[in-house]
Length: 432
Image 1 (cartoon, one colour):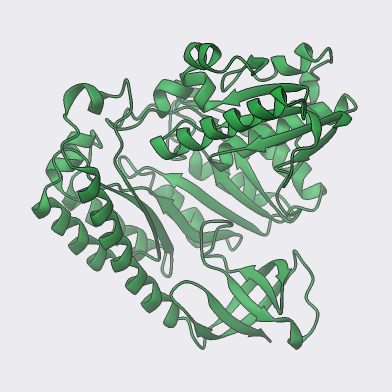
Image 2 (cartoon, rainbow, N blue to C red):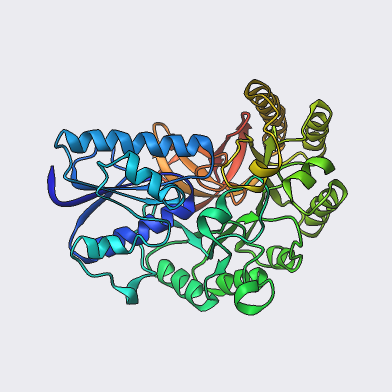
């Protein structure tokens, strides 16, 4: 057990990761030695930043807390703290069920941990972060919460209403990160298209992206996660005209059947969804569209699922993820509908949908053979340098493998790479 040391474990999404990075910075300002996601916990204090979005994520978080609770009982760690979405949602229950935890914090009051350790939280430096990503890219969180109230989603219950960060603070954060060597920025929020309505009275995501793209040293800007209803089409103009705004949009569509979309409270129908996709592709030629779909939501029978598969065949998404519906306590769907689709059927539909997308992905990737792509190098792995194109977000998207035998490449630098081969997901190429 290392004295004056803290291990932080982050579970869940990149929005949680940003919170952990801010916490790490505050702890370091107070003299702690901090490690993030260590292979083996060795610090005297451990903090778990939890996810509480869906059943699998909640189970992972609970198992991690229980495992660390045992380590504390065995004397391997001295103090255990828990923060994040799971503890925000189930604060009272967790405190009763897992007494080994010294204190639970929610999604937003984790700053109290600093004072509970007898240290001082520096509000003047609250936007500073210790990056846990490779130093050439970072996530920038532009808002908290969500106002959309989709029937299946617990996020508004956990995080509350949508709260935009002031544009000036976001731009200042980007400028600071550029000064630290960051070149690529993943712009994130529960959904980015609502940005600005609470602060400025209208959607301001296009203006925000424009201002970020004006910062000298910003090489790539990539956007996660858009909402299809009332989509701000002025954003497409910025994407088309600004070279450092990646032609990439992560837009969760969830389904295509009108009845299922209505049950989900998505406030959009099949025709409008298809028109949106066509317009995005028309206004930003060559754009990479990433989406997320859900199977097994109440109201989805075989006919509705077949319609969803037909939609995937039609849309030919460059990137697609999917998950099976799980009923979440307190959501409109849990109150209004019976979870009628069996788990077995959900998993079979999920498998069928992803197999369909695998074929589409293989076709999309094969179509890039012979092209020249600008690639940023993330790491060296075995005999290859591993990088990404503007169409690939870290962690979730395909990568480009460049043989190390072709010469040394610098991590974080851009290179032109001719694509020579492809498999279902990854590309292979040689530096030009």
